Image 1: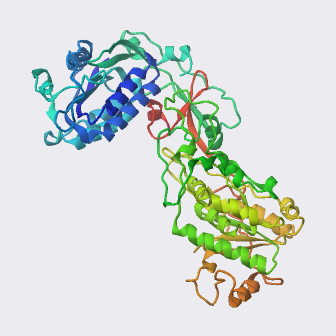
Image 2: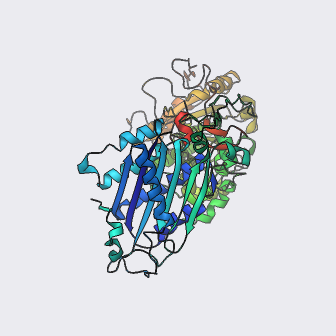
Length: 188
Length: 426
């Protein structure tokens, strides 16, 4: 089997803890064993929440790679981001203040997909985006919307995570300046 | 998926998760593709399942294999109302909003929804009443679809009263019709066939003199073809009026039957729409004749306006109207336009009470007045329904659902692309 990968990560200003809590609840509430339909429903709700709050996303990145080896390597890389807790803080940061001392959350999802499957190829076409549109908010919105077409029967593996895992552990503006977050692009 | 066996065929399984203060997340693997990658063949073809229930009218079975985009699901159509009663009014669209036209600034106590059905249930004509719509707000599903993860919220929590100028107009017409019938002691039952909210408003206007008998036989749905939540919202707006009118209404009042004209609405997008249409359940000729102690001499059929092409009556009424006429209960149509002040003054009936209007009304509907109306039997070419209007085609009022191939359990609605199963749906 050959693979392709899609991944998206968003860094979102936390006006309060609502969105972060909702996303965490979805992740925690997603059973260890799920059907394709349950998986699809999880991401429907994720897409809904992210779409409603996309105006608060300040940074992000997304990628789609056709090359089999890179797809597998990158998927492992996204998984390691969770397992090593690389992006997470080691100490609490407090609740901050959205105006003067904001806190940020990140949401990450990545799919290792079966090359050649119709819905994967459709997604591949949708991810063919001109360079000047790559980091547009509208592009993120369109990709989120079109993820609804993905057939999870053709998704070999997925990883999903939310930072922070608890209130009071949000990322600070200083955290986002760390080299480990340099892959983030400003969303315009 | 409802059981372990089903999961063993398809699905994801998590191998690692993290739940820490800094981050929460997990990884899942698609067991079938992992096995496929190992060279394990798991191709098998499902046999056609005999799905229980006479309500299933179509089904298709997909191969369960590792081929891309082939899912182990079965598709079937089920009566929409049955699905809603079993799984909830918002079956397949949990969390989606109802769209309300119109607003109401009048004080509203949501607890009154609990008594809406009781407040609008007729006393005299109870056997002819169809309570379906009024039962929706407080109904609780017997179960939830196997794949549904959104908690159920009753329709009552989504409802609010609405008020529009069209409702005002219909209300005034209802009041006028009732007054004219009463003033001239005309023994006619009334059947109002208007868009839901206006039909309810008409009934509210007439409710002091005629007893409303609702024939609204569906439930609202966020993706419903028929926006019948607007009729409910109008009923909420007029609920105090219905209560007050009932106390004033003479016990021998004649019936006013209420239908939602949108019940047969044509639609084409079956992939995103919930078909909550229905065929009107009118009283039989015998029931109509005997329902008021044998006093009903004819039926006044109220529509919005004469359609530019075709007859005024809705298609599903044709057979019943013909039966009424055959049993000596003629039907006479009238339009709301004929009651509106801005209509040509030489013909309109106004709001009743004027001598000229009374004369005109009696010329049309008084004893001995000619009645040339004849219901028009539809053909396959001009009908929404089957060749004879009172019979629905097989898929009318049904919704396509996804069933677990192994168990026949309803997984969800096959709307749009709401589910991996939908990519293969025809």
